[in-house]
Image 1: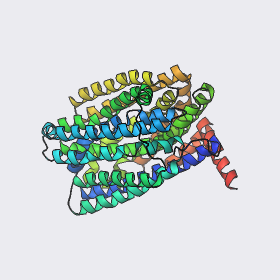
Image 2: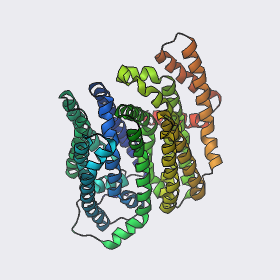
Image 3: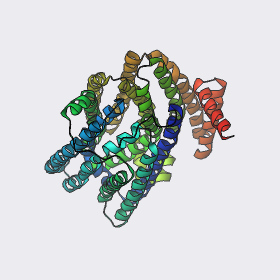
Image 4: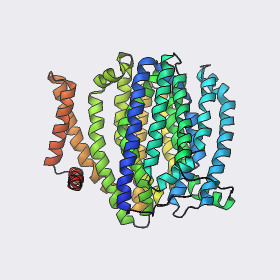
Length: 485
């Protein structure tokens, strides 16, 4: 049985329900992961986190290969059939087994490359996640396409909660890096059991070469683009792990994790919800531009001040959350937060372009984006750890500009219009940040009080400057209040 998007309510109602459940899912998962990260940071060492960070690239790339761009292709295809879904399912199973075999065989060479013997066993066990996750890709995709994030949220939160308990138990038992591996495995296993229990879809005994070719024609380019994105996202851990110590790799991993929670949680949530809607508007460029423009204003209005706050108060935040042994991660985190201004935005342009079927263009420009990142990383690694971090910030800026150029070319959302949407918010954030930093440094004011002052000044300035994003937020709040009343 294949759920469709035409059952009840209007697109508007489906969107609201999708946003609510996607928010519950995303923020619930982030909260659980944040809690477990705090606990593990006090029970484990930077070396433990560094070891797992070095090998995550193999699992991430394998997972992307299994997706094969098929998930996006199934969402983008208006009338995907049972044959399409079943073909994708059987391909995922076969391919995941082949990928795991590859991971198993290369594990000794990976351990030798990083000069850490324990990585061989860690990688071979962690790689099993690839096969387990392949079993649920189709169920998750069908639910996403129907904007049914309720089931996804229930599954994700339950499986993540159970894996948190497993990780804490293992950490207390002195399992070190294996605690993180145990968390990944238990999460994947329970998620699979729940998806099969709660989803009505089941594969039929068919595999269509024609369906495979049709889906791959769209998804193939997205696949390669996604592989390059995953490789270059995780290659940072490889470059750092090879050129620096396991401890430095762990410090970087913790800083990056914290940065991604702040800069990517809400944007990725909205991208989940809006990609199917972008796809529905692929033939109405004017409405698509309007939706994308509103997304850009809203997300910058929320994320920009958050990143500025974290840059200013990074030191007390890290000491409070993780303890003194992680304080060396603070400068890493502050630099990564600068990149967060760009990374919070670039996926909106990417998914809008994908929604209008321009996967080939995303592939070609992906070659440029991720090639540039790799080059920047290699140059930065020859300088210092800070050189690597600056390279990542430059790459984030480059990715944003490239995706914005593609949105201009294929959707008509001009780069100048996009800058007009976000520049006032950026200037307001920078001005507020400068005022708050001076107060914090030159007056004896608690950092929490300074943070509250920052928000008050920011909102007051946005009101006085009559920022469009501020008006958008006000209108949204008014609608919610009227609806509740």
